[in-house]
Amino acid sequence: MRGVSATSLAQVLDTVGGVTADGAQGVAVGTDVFAVVGALDANPVLRRVLSDPATESDAKAGLVGTLFGDKIGSGAVDVVVAAARGRWSAGRDLSDALEQAGVQAVLSAADSAGSLDTVADTLFAFARVTTSDPELRQTLNDRTASVEGRQVLVSRLLGDQADDVVLALARQAVASRGRSYETAIAAFAQDAIAREGRLQARVVSAYALGDDEKQRLAGALARKYGRDVHVDVTVDPNVIGGISVEIAGERIDSTVSTRLADARRALAG
Image 1: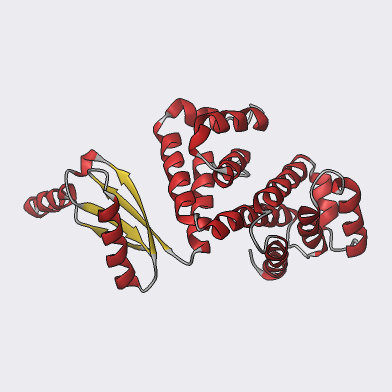
Image 2: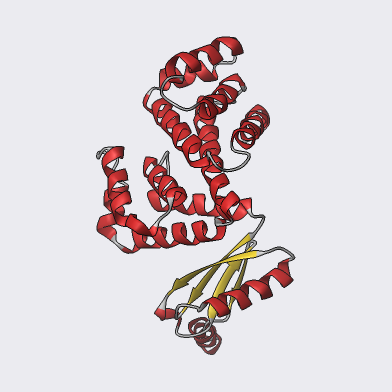
């Protein structure tokens, strides 16, 4: 976001920080905010009213209280009121800002528990499951099916493997909001990494790296780029050997398949 929307987003996120200071209510606040995002997406007229710069801020805050005050918790109400009082370049910016606020509220719980890295790993892994199964991918991205039904499916797929933070974010990704399910859930994982101040390294390897190997690779990349690094590994037997790393806009490719391809191009002249 840019301009007035960026300023308003910062104010909304400040409010999130205030109501989730200890992380204890993070998931509850985030889930409630996600519910409001769904309501705004389903009701463009309401979204326009709450983002209309010609309407008094107090009037918009009062409307939020009337519509949502008895449906969501007080912390979530404060966040939505902060958004309604803001100024937005476009109505959709209001909904986008609230979704970001909900994500940060949920992640505050993982931040407090010291589990942001685990959350990111789990979300990235689930995104890979989605993309590797065409039928599942189609189902989760089917906008003719109800959001609630697809969220139930996500809950069943994750089962006991996911904590409340992962479950809340994986369920919200179903809403899509202009992007595919796998793109949305990967973006939420990246938000978890960014909250830790880390860089993301996308690694492709011929085999699954062990924890020690991942730690050594993360350490080497951290020394090179001057920041802690989260390593996300995708296994692809087609690379034959070695690894490929994408980080900070750079690509480091030491796979055998790439070297062979380079050699073939060199021989072809």
